[in-house]
Length: 247
Ligand SMILES: [Zn+2]
Figure 1 (cartoon, rainbow, N blue to C red):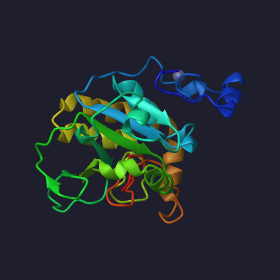
Figure 2: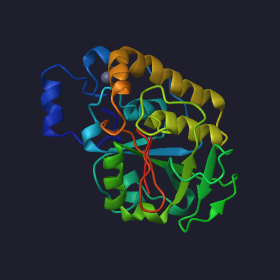
Figure 3: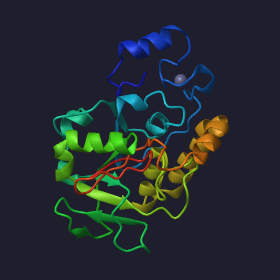
Figure 4: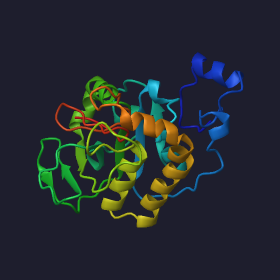
């Protein structure tokens, strides 16, 4: 199991012991992604805060993103005292931003950045790390409110110009890994990184579970549970499905 994952609960051990789940990536053995991911090392660090109930979701992309992005950290839990606690090391909070989906003021833009006081920041702003909340909209909102230190961070909002590979309850909803890919694209990372993240998500998770994706896409949005995360802005998360996090 990746060392950045700190939780090994009884429920996980039970599934692993029964031989149904890979102990490292926590996916069904037939869909184990260990050793099959292509990893990249973006300049910006990625911290994924995953709601505990998301760990075994077949369409969850948080673990794949973690394995494919060197230096990333995946934390499973509900609350942390501050950024350093969540990250597991000291960090300058002023250089970090939380990712969320809503809040684009200029529709023609793919990305906008805001200060903690909601001031629009120049697109050239540099961040050393991005936080992405992985969970349903409801879960992401809960994570947001349980971690008031998130409100003191910069925020990044995304305006995807392409639909998610999986059904989303929100028009602009994205899977966590898709949101990370778009953010990296917009922040100037090599486009090959974002393209590969999307491709790996499609080939390793979406395609093997195509029937589930089709089934979920048929469920009316108001009845569908959200997963993904999204970050937020003012106090309301925005989570996309899997993206990350809330305000
Ligand atoms: Zn595995």
